[in-house]
Image 1 (cartoon, rainbow, N blue to C red):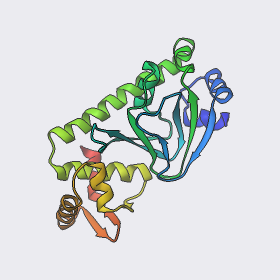
Image 2: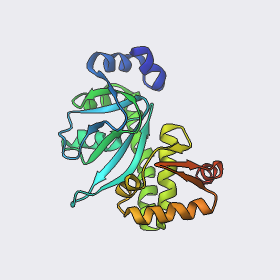
Image 3: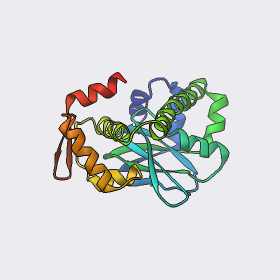
Length: 217
């Protein structure tokens, strides 16, 4: 496991990787398996070795809102925040695809922040990157039309599985974007007419131009 962690997290120094191996557990997740739920007592946090994880936020009425994905070589900023503040998880973490993660005990965070400069840098980069990511999500909710939010969501899903074909229902999308299936179906048909995607039975094929549009934004 040490060699794999060093390869996926090349910025971490060897002594730190050794401590990760000695104090952590390797966990394999099946697609759509829940790693953490909102309200879960955070006693550890994930570092992704392969696959990708989807992060959702639950509101006071039990509705879930999509926030972002984390990929190999990353960890969840929200989990780190809960670890440092000793608070229950405020997010739900689900495997977007079959994934492999290292589960690290929370008590090591403070120790590593002072002991390893590469860990401090890694955590800082994680916060900075996710802050920008969350700002984009907030902007899409506050200022973007639903069709733009939908395109961002589809792009993020596509990037998470490294494929342009998404096996997903309109109801699944509606649930994570906190809207109705009717609205999503209508918008998808409009996007299909624009040539941005092709609809199938429980399947959406994104056109190459759709991905290029998102990458250039």
